[in-house]
Structure formats: structure tokens, C-alpha cells
Length: 337
Image (cartoon, rainbow, N blue to C red; front, side):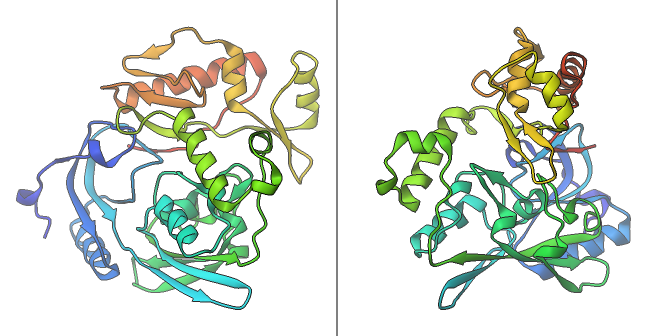
């Protein structure tokens, strides 16, 4: 199936949101679980590297990929309605924002704060995506995982997923030799809105609906984030660092109005964008890799940046922030070498 003569060295530029112009030996789109298994078995037989992507929204290719890139297009949504809740069994190749819009159309709410987040449902579970006070872990009931070695499917329930800030068990124990097939999402029929600060200023509480929150978040994201049709990026490049109260006390003795959120474990999450803003980088760029002016947490490919140039820029930022604030910025994205 994938003997050397069939390798076409296809471009991945349109299949990763950073728009990095790299190639793979071959790109295969899969629409069924069986076709995914078939590709895996062939790659295993010929010892060919193998990687699964959805929208390529949280990855940075550092060089040409010397293997097969599988694009997950396994789709479908099964709705099970109960008296007070609705369970959506969603296959992993569904686009996340399409799912959000679908849930609104059928009248089940709770995903509207996660509007316009790029990527597919499978990667949403891996990352435990979150925005504007909401996280996937708040609605996820289970994740079905396919073992590519024996073709068995295991259901990992919410309490086993080890969801945390931009993290899950799927980044570790189930990273190699496994593929997320579907995710179970439970939504309540009784809507409990998550109201974030800027939205309270924008609209009276009596006028708040799931649709008004969805539309406002789409407005915010379109105005704050680069236009994906013109500029390559992966959204937030760095995680917001979580620091001790002792370190925060030292920071607040030097600066005021630090954006922060108290964590359940007594630690404090502060804004990585604020740290980068305070460093006051001036016209810093490596080739076409630069910091996005409207949102300092985002690194962009202005036109023809390479993955290595974006990586080099991120390292410079990390070192500078570490020296100035004694805080380490951890990348949110995955590097593919």
C-alpha cells in the first residue's frame, strides 16, 4: 500500500494552522475506524512513522515529516435525550466549532463559551480545551480510545481522564499506539450560563442567552486572533503559568493589576500575555515568525516562516521572561520533528 514508489511527498501547508510549508511522505484521509486500522497496520509492517491530525491546529512541524500523516475525518453525532440532560456521542473527526453550533441548533446549551476554538473533537479531549470560564472537562463524560495494536476500543471515563489545565491522560499514557475515536458530552436542559467579566459590561443580565454569549465570543475571538485565512498561528503558543503565592507576592510588590486566577490547590494562574507585554519586546522577529501585536500570547507565521524560526522565537521569549520574572513559560503546542 505504501511502498516507496508510492510516496508522493505531499505538502502539509494547508493541513496545519501555522501554515508551515513542510511535506509528508504521504497524506491519507480516513473516514472510518477500519480504514484507520488498515493504515496503521501497513505503517507498522513497513516500519513507517505515523501520526494522526485533525485540523492541525495545535502542532508545529519543525521539518519535513518522514512518514504518513493521517487526517481524521471520522464523523458523526449520536444524540441521546433524557429527562434533564442530553448526551452527545461525538466522533473525533468532527470540527469542534461545528459541534458547538450544532448543539445550539438542537436546543442544548453549555458549549457556547467554547465557541470558535479551532480543531477537532479528538484534539479537544487531548488538550482539555478551555476559554472564558469553561473547559471540556466540565461537560465530558467519557472518551473512547482505539488501541491500534489489538483493535480494541476502551472507554475512559471522566474521572480517569486526568483532565487539568491544557492536559489529560491522552498526552501521556495514551499518546502512542492509540487513537481517540469518540467523546461523550453531557449537556443539561437547565441552562446555567458562565458569565465572564467583559460580557457583564456588554449586556444586561436579563438579556443573556446562549446565542448572545456564542455571538459575543465569536466577535471577541475574531477581533483578537489573527485571520486564519491570511496568517498562520496555533492560537495561544504558551500556557498561562501557575505560580506559588510567594512568587506572586514578590511580583505584586513590583507590578499592579496583574491578571490572575486563584487555583483550588492554593496556587495562582497568571497571564502569560501580560508577562510578554510587560517585557516590552520591540519588533522582535525571526524571519517571518513574530509576536502577534493584538495578543502577545500568539506567535504567527506572517508569510513564509519555518517551524524552526518559530521555535527559535519562542525560546528567546522563554529565556527573556525567565530572566526578568523568574517564571518559565511552557509551550501549549506539540512539536513534530
